[in-house]
Amino acid sequence: MSQESMVPGELGDPAVRGAVSAPAGAPRRRTAEKEGLAEPGAVTIVVPTFNESANVRELLHRITESVPTRLPCEVVFVDDSTDDTPEVISEAAQDCPFPVTVLHREEPVGGLGGAVVEGIKAATSDWVVVMDGDLQHPPSLVPELVGTGERAHAGLVVASRYIKGGSREGLAGGYRIAVSRGATWLTKTLFPRRLRGISDPMSGFFAIRRSAVTAEALKPLGYKILLELAVRSRPREVTEVPFVFQDRFAGESKSTAREGFRFLRHLLGLRTASPVARMVVFGLIGATGFVPNLVGLWALTRTGLHYVPAEILANQLGVAWNFLLIEHLLFRDRRGHRSWWDRTGRFALLANADLVLRIPLIALFVHTSGMGAVPATALALVMTFVLRFVGTEALVYLPRRGREGRTAPRRAA
Image (cartoon, rainbow, N blue to C red; front, side, top):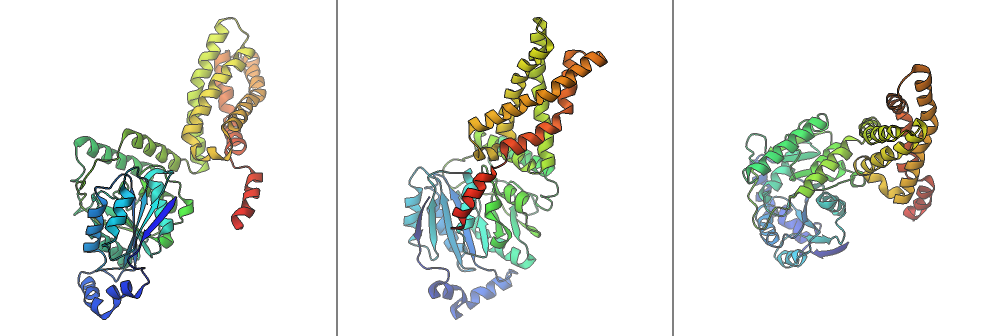
């Protein structure tokens, strides 16, 4: 990741500090008090960008008009662009009375959410405001977000389209409105406790205290970083302010079907963060594996093959099916701990070792209870479920202790 900083003056420089706190700045502080805003701390505005060269000049102009006169600020662009967005920012920053930094990422790990996390790590201010680079989030609201947080002693202030005074009018098209409302309903249904008091968890416009979030604990995937923050490290005090979602200033929306699928994967990852939830999803995936397993068993026994070798062969179909779903839906964020071949081999070995316990159970059910091979297999699969889950998590997807032990000294150094 490359970093370029265009700094007319640092936040701590007398020139910048004087613009806010010197005698000439006193009327500005009185104006803030008159408007009912608490005297806010400094703010870092984090803007993730992807090919927004047509928007960033106007964005910096509007920030200049509405923010520095009310509180000290810096702007950090975290850029994943393939166009000339960094160069345009560099040129536009020359006219800004506040520091402007560009962090350009060659690999956009985590998508827009990952970019926001990088911006939070780079922030130097008490408050971090996250906003899009397309001007659908009005920069004039930044002082109000911070001021509301200071006044309410909150750790997170969400700009909401769904409270009195807010509007989604810039969300063009009935399809996008329906998708937004559906995603909001789904997330609030899945996380009723964590999202209590947040009417717009899909908002990309919010302020958070830097001390209220541990960036290293976040695992963003896609563009809904507020949901990630609220679920993994929700501050104790949360409040909201209304905002009107604006029309995009220039360019086209980056929302695609691919981003929608990433969002659904992200939801699943957040929902399965606890062991109990992971076990439930593991069970649901295992239940779908019954289908290829039992269909294969039925087909093989119909050819006259004895149920024991038929079960061994049919089991491989269920193993392959379950492995694919578990890899992509349940343990996606843990795949980096081991190579694909290592994970595949361990999973297959564990799943087939399960037969050592399962086949005697099947034989017991068939010979002593008179059950057919198919129902006996289904019952044995259910009985060995917990052992399969614990073994899969511990032996396939948990980090190797040796690797952790070897990397720890290097991190300390």
